[in-house]
Image (cartoon, rainbow, N blue to C red; front, side, top):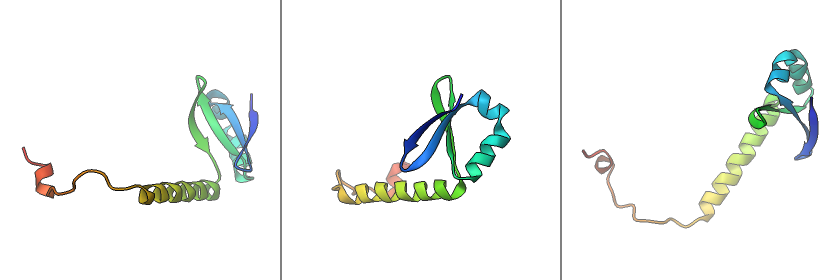
Length: 89
């Protein structure tokens, strides 16, 4: 059973791991046409299958968001240790 929802202007489909295994060629064909699949096992998402260009764009976007958030935060705690002190026994 495949359930279709909308996420970030693209079609995302949810498919069970067993179904993805049985229909892997069909899944890859749909992915090559731009669809994104979330594979679930026992009701929990375990993987996402997406076109390489979509996955790369999402990864770049997530990285940009994370870096922007980190740069906006103030530094907390003292940073006056030396590298060797981290490995002192």
